[in-house]
Image 1 (cartoon, one colour):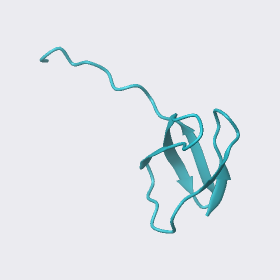
Image 2: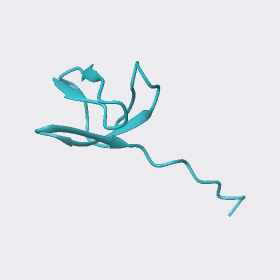
Image 3: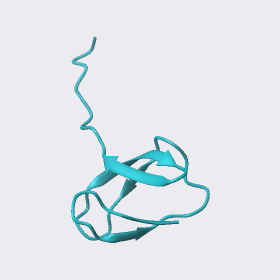
Image 4: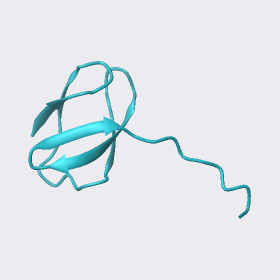
Length: 55
């Protein structure tokens, strides 16, 4: 499957086993991307991990 990075528009090819909510990395701009749809393949910038400060 092929799609474009939402950050830099670089073409990305991902395997057919890609799952919903999987985190991928753009090889060009190194952005972390989240799979938000697999049919059609749609990627979004992954949310930043938040600190829980021991809660």
